[in-house]
Picture 1 (cartoon, rainbow, N blue to C red):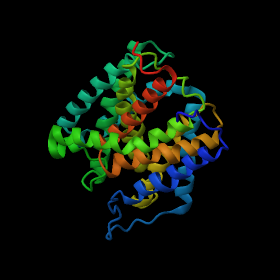
Picture 2: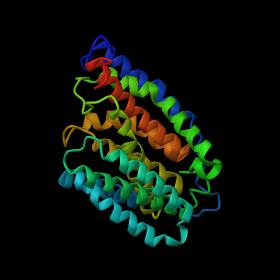
Picture 3: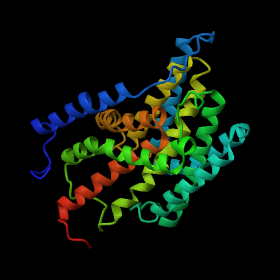
Length: 311
């Protein structure tokens, strides 16, 4: 890192990518416990033709929506989340609403200083609160209605073990993210080019760490799963939903609309690990991983570019 960013074809860059792919990412996905979602008594079989058609249509809708609307698509997601909550209101739990509201307040406060410039900070902060509240509440209601939450998919440590357990999961997520975060810093083409202008600003990574787990994982993955579940067995439907939404989320973070290489790289190395943590470990560990990754990348870039002098 201190030698400067490598070129994309340098031995160091190749070594970092191979290490993150074959060692950290592959080993994490392999070792995470994954519940068996297919019940032996379930007579449903995957209808491959309809499954493929459904997958293509959902992918086309997701990618084209962002292609034409950009980040303004985020303003539609709280409406979508509210619609899901109304449809699955029998499966909405009050304590989950309160917990999601608390997380939304944290994300909203952090959003005031998150360095977003395409909308005013106040509107962005309110949006983050709404995305978090509706995303988590809708996601848990869908997972509960389908029986996945009871199987341990998308569970929260807060409800299982309380505040200490939730904070422990958050800390474990931060520890887990360190190889990915340092690898990303080593691969940055211009580590000094960062939105961070003050030493405290990396803490605002709480905003994407919380809100993006709500709308980018907990809202959309169960929703896509419920659609695919009509034509496929649960295991196949959920796995494909998780991967599809993961690569769409990676697509949102590419520098250009048709950057397939970056989409695949970011999706495989960065997004899939946090997606698997969110659904197959717990929400708080995923939030910690996401926050820790963004925090370390921005803070390290800031230090490398400006030194340790606080401003």
